[in-house]
Image 1 (cartoon, rainbow, N blue to C red):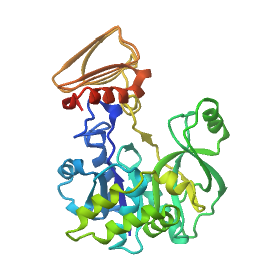
Image 2: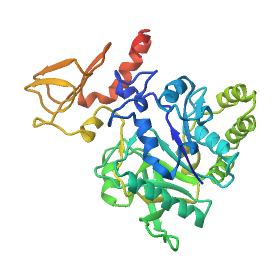
Image 3: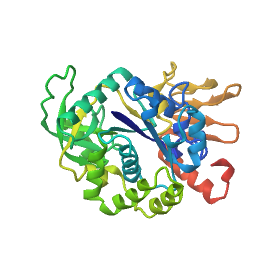
Image 4: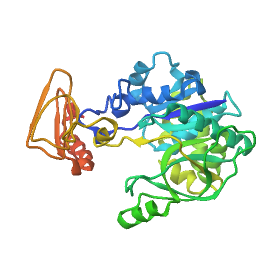
Length: 363
């Protein structure tokens, strides 16, 4: 059966002041009426029913996640005691899934992506599952055909084409991954874009739970041993204490570094769906229509001599901008951000300085 693991533990600092420690961006309705996490779960549809969804987050967010999914059983929300990046999270989820389904297929995805073609997305997941039936050791990822020379995404370089499994009704271009490349800068990003053989690494994976556990045992044996100790106590009174002790002892590392860049049976499917990694306020301009002056307005707004701005605020609060261009304006009940769009990465520094000043109420 297909199971889904949704990673929802990020802090979303670049979406401050709306994203806060107690309610980070994945729990916010940034791309529609539902939160990003709720939309991610809904996107799975009947392919992965709720009883086969595991949401991995940090322990402080477990109550907030449970509030958004009251129908989820408590064991379906995994609250990590500390941040250790994606590899330990994925490995533990795989071990827990294997306790009840020894032949499980895992879909792993972040909670903060926007994918509008939901039917195509589910069909592509089904095709990936067919690839695993043919070879259960494969590790499948989805590549996004670049639309510009992005410097903020990792890339996967494709190698030889893979012939689709027999009797598959619908399939997409699939290749062996020749190598992964980290976020390129300047000329290198343009080189990747112009080559036509590089995809943006979407961070969405499909594999057999056993295959990823085996890969972690091979490439990260110390981590794998800690994770096994945790999984062995699942469902017992010792679980919480063991989880905290063993997980804290793990050295954090991403699944890309831990496994994907070392494994020799990684394949990439050219994604048949649009994809947006909603990383900062500028994503709002891609997700919502602009007015005649190029402003993306998600508020009650009066703009005079205002162009190419992103304006967001709560209902019942009027935001007036005069003589602004290429700015981000975000108003919340207790904090307001006004920033040049070119400084969006520095929002993280804002959060850091607020923390250093001890202004915890605004974090």
